Image 1: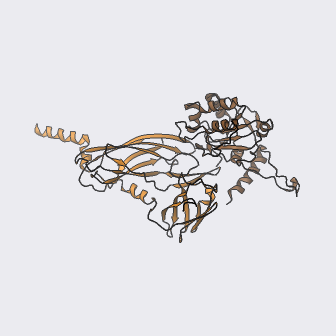
Image 2: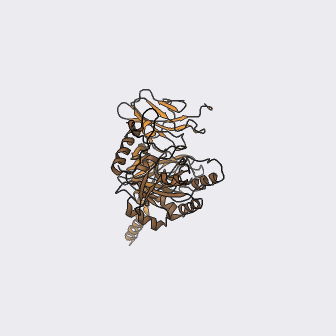
Length: 276
Length: 220
């Protein structure tokens, strides 16, 4: 009789997700819409008081479809993430891996993600978070997924994590994080040289085998980014759409093709002549 | 590769094939017009808007220069009935209908243009004739399946708006409003503001805004 009771108790505990907690795998609720599936993942298996934990807003995108990056695009709109965190938790700025150029007939230039993308969302854990608490981190997502047609989709995603004094790396989704980090701009880099004369802007990285410039949505507009913003060699010459940018800087990310086939990413910011 | 030259050749090819485009000849005083190939003039703000002739879903032909010859102001609305951003203005809200009503009151001619290539999303006579009814559109939808007019104007999104004044000059291009979502309307309706400024004799402040929407479905 006691053995049966014990078996029932263990079974109930397991069904309640006990096995999940035991192995450190956090519970997650995903967002399933039409052509992209979203979920919230974490770089470590627990929240530690006073620390910053990086979450990942991770999309699996149906083959042939794409989502839009946070770059100046002709069409579409970038993925929107609205964090919904408990009191005391603070979401920092989203970190976007550099997308890829996508040129469509009619000289239409967009910058998109295909197959999968994970945006990083660093979250500051309050110093007074209680050890042993199980915390729900949520986000509302909206995106435009396109192939030859475009569909707006949305989802709510959630992730449950325990608060513990220490946390270990969460191995299951580690590849998503490293894939994104490999395409983040290196803010410490001083390699890029940017100069401007009137409407001409020259971006240069000595030794590069190729360059691609991804202007941010707020950057001064380019006259012909399809022609100018990508090329082989160590230099790009961009023509601005207007000599008077109204104070808008030339700003974005430069992808640098290195010998050997790898790429690195450097932020670029060239202010207006009066300022600098 | 110089994209502009490729487009120039493509436009000439389409013009010959479809006879849809009276080429804007550049008459130079030195050589006669017959000696120079006719130049394809792409739309530029403050310049003469490129002319075109297209057929609408009812089979009626429209030529831009015939409207401007009558001193009419013309608004062009790039259109794709399947695009969620177009539906925002035609189904979710009545913003396009309301803006049209306002423009019509000012004597403006309003033409929708669908530059989707045959077989692409929302393209073709049948789909657009049906959409006109479904959306209650009181103005024509011109079929530009070859993408000639679209490429002349640099139409990239649906919607993408252009305003041509009574002299035939392009005075506005860009979005209809300042909310680039598929759900909500912007605080500023650029087309309406443009018409109001002109009516008041004031210069149009925002005459070159960022258009938003789905990409125009040109042939691949």
